[in-house]
Image 1 (tube, one colour):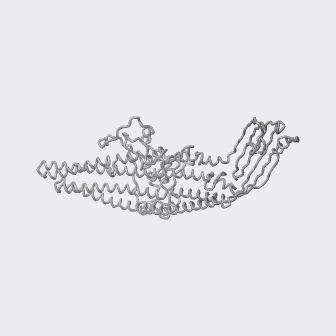
Image 2: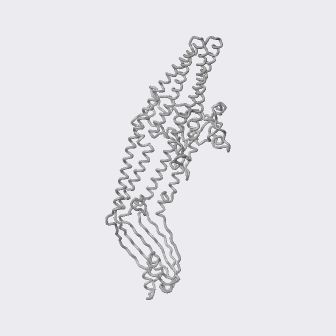
Image 3: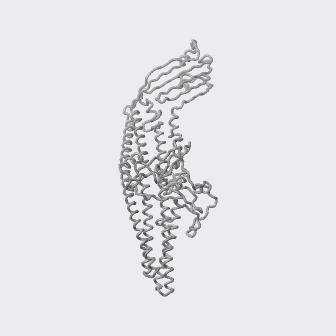
Length: 577
């Protein structure tokens, strides 16, 4: 397996990242921004750290506080597998060999139809001393077999010491017959209660798929917040540039007021712009409550997803560059991938398979109970011919072969179970069909958003270029005294807005790219995420290959300059479990 190695040891230092001191530093304020150490991480670094700390699979909504029971963990599949009632081992235990033994001394009299009379050999009266030993099990075909022996001492019934052995078999011919039924429903199945090993395996697989879905959502959220943090820094840079431009314009107006060249109210206008720009910088650092788009706020969200300490002297700073090249996906191929790779459909397919098996089991339980039975029992030595012990000897010897038949006259419960299983199967199939329609609609929306985001990015790039030319020209004219400060200040506002909108459109383009792969069901592949090292207790994921953001050559470049994202990107190297 090709593991990803990173050349920045400080960025992945276990000591620096995961060891929390008993006393965390105080949350930073806006004035602390310049004194904080910037921790530069690529998107692959962030995803790797998030997966390494993904015992509890986090989300942006903080469900771990509001709905902790709905939060997925890497322990969930193992928890279900080890469930003593619903797990795979619990289902297999129905076929385990059972061992039974006992020793009884009868101190007063011989009872008819005693507990021993219902045992393996049907003795009519209990002897003074009885020892029994036997084994039995249910075979995968539903056949019940048992083998055992009894022995002891009784002077009255047996004339002394006695010993006997025997065997019994009961094989179902209709209801409960067959290996497939017993693997689906189990040998102790009742209408509506099916807990065979195949059902348990499907439940376990579904738990694994749910963990995979949560990991996919975690990777998506990490990527989204990572690029949102990239925009937060770019927005801060634009605001800092606007502050410097406003400062220069204000200083020039102060000089002109001092020289009696400009009226004081014009200087006040430049001062007002400077302090507005200063407030904008503070908002870009800390964030505002409605949007929560400041560096501190977005960085905290990313820290939460990565399970890092809330407060630190290090400030995460994106080191990767966003994608800017035009990307095109084939619609037919993308829709076909979405219909096969989307985790929601895979989970629903598992539910359909489960309902199909339950319907087969319910139909089997509609049949009458027809069992072929056989018994054999024999004394360990020659039977006594004494008259007083003949009855005892006859009770411990002999053989039987026969057939038993039973069923409910109306079969109402069994018929209802079949109808119920059929309706559940129809329900799951209808849900799957509706999911396919929603997935196609979601994929189309992602395609439209990708096209819109790229077009807007191109337009905003031209807008930013024009705004910078205008600002530079107006600043030069203002320095030469050819224009009023109002025109310079307006040019500064336009340039700042154009820069911010361009960076926003660039991030939107990368977010649209992520959403397309999320809609296609290929997000984990393009991010290089696969199974981690297998353990007995946890279902782990890891970054097993570099993502497309670290490997731009994974796209095919056409002569037109347009990068084609199809055929499908190579799958990540996955460690087999």
